[in-house]
Amino acid sequence: MKFIHGQQQVPCLFFYGDSQFDNGNNNLLITLAKANYLPYGIDYPEVQPQFLGFDNPIPPFVTARGSDILKGVNYASGAAGILDESGILQGDRFTMNRQLLNHRITIGRIGVLLRNNQTTVDDYLNQCLYVVNMGSNDYLNNYFLPVLSPARLLYTPDRFAEILVQKFSQQLRTLYNSGARKVAVFGVGLLGCLPQELANFPTNGSACVDFINNAAQLFNNRLIPLIDDLNNNLPDAQFIYVNITSISLGDPSAIGVRVTNVPCCVVRRTTGLCAPNQVPCSNRNEYTFWDNFHPTQILNRATASRAYTATLPSDAYPFDIRTLVQQ
Image (cartoon, rainbow, N blue to C red):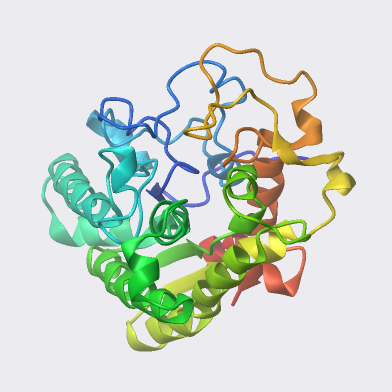
């Protein structure tokens, strides 16, 4: 698969999300949700920036300094969710609300670099791409904890999805008010097919835990109306929805993947993450999952490719990232 080389298609790129995007923000936090040890990192390069013409990875917020932040910042944090309480059992994390506060700090630093000309700062931020991948931990590390969670006692799956989207709507409006105009919002994937969930819950003969997938889909189903609402009511807003479920439903054997229900690395059953310093499988390009939660690099590359250039109309709404950055 060829990457798009040459000129950057946007001046800067900001990431908000969970462990799917976290490239170091959790390293100094007291948390189980970190991956700063081998065998993590052997296939590290971030994929999405390469499609957009960036030569180097986007730095994590905790280490981003100086003029590097003009290329963007990665705020993502393992175990983070839309709700502040999601992921609390893992330890500390930068929730979506904290990530938005961290972005305000970055904007202040960008202001200094651009000599505090507010018009220049606003114009610059308006041109950047913002990628938001939130919601998985609100299910995995909140609603569907292996023990019955308070959220599941209090709310039906439909009501929980409604609460999540209401909160998410406020957060995306906060992002807009901070200068974001081009925003790619990733939906939640097939969480019920993760090896960790297959170990934690009965499948009743199905290949996946269907009630988890069905609950997450109630959240995804509300994202297109949310995108329409933001685009219709916020001047110059260009929000898009990237449908990870649509992208995930393809036949993995088309890219050589044949092992779809067990991880490539030796995992700790308690955390679902790779055990430190164990040798992973040698044929990881044939595996869907790296550990009990996260896809392998070959899957990440395929997902990033279809998010950038949609293969099917259902992959992105109203259009893909490639079209968004050209607007």
